[in-house]
Length: 405
Image 1 (cartoon, rainbow, N blue to C red):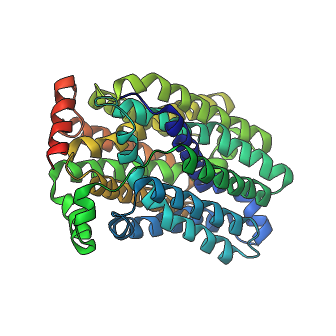
Image 2: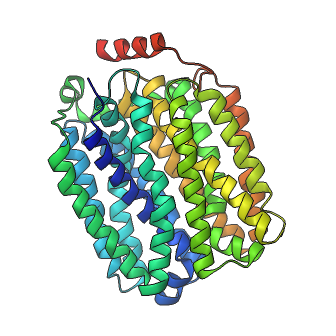
């Protein structure tokens, strides 16, 4: 069996659309706030509300859709994305904008829950991490191109045009998914299980100590990151005087370094996850803490780029971990991981909004750094979740265990 590259590319393009659209308000806080007559802090809550709905709905909706063929389900989730972006582009009020994003949030959790198991079915044994890294290039490109290009376009033609373009891109992805994805029926054990049992399995997977530890690491790390990243625009404006085109350029650099880091670490995803997650988390901690004092343009740019490179590479390792630590319940483990990630996004954006509203913008990097360091320590103490080394025999054993169930 060979890597199904066309399907992986389209899946990567779909992740590009999801990630870029979800985080686009970060770069367009001033424009959206001015157009809809709300504060920048309120616009930041778009990420919080989105994450809350995604977190709450992921497990029940994943359980309800376990019997749906995987190729059909992933296409439906991207179709919902396209429709919601179209509605957001014409939203006359902030409330309508928020509601349109919440529709997308309902599909978001299911999309991210099923994509990792789908990727695994498109890759030969032992290359799931490599295939995941290929798809997650879409995540990095969303930061490299999607957010900065969307920010620049939104500043030039208006934020509604930027959102509308993602609606069109989502529709194109739906057509491509239907064209290139092979038939991926639901697994026999999923077709046979009742919905209630599926939901109990998804919740019960948290009794797996390794899955629970993965969720703790994910939540701690992501809360800190999004507390600061949601307000990166006012942060770099304060620290370096960057705004408008300069902000777009910095976001482009942030994502470009992340793309490079993704390319470098992809060869280690299936072999040495532990040391890489520890090192990357520690790098995030160091770089983001250095943004707390006002150091001027050059240090701000350097540490922002270092932060982007380190953090953007980490989700590749996190998203493949559920497949490794729970080989007999991959969809359920992926679902609770997605919930943990969304709790991190929503919790981080909420904490950021509270601190910014209280006038403590400068404390966001300190919070992010402390939580990243905490995640690094927990990872070091969790070799069963993030092994120092994975052998080919380990991969074969996991695949045999999954096949047996």
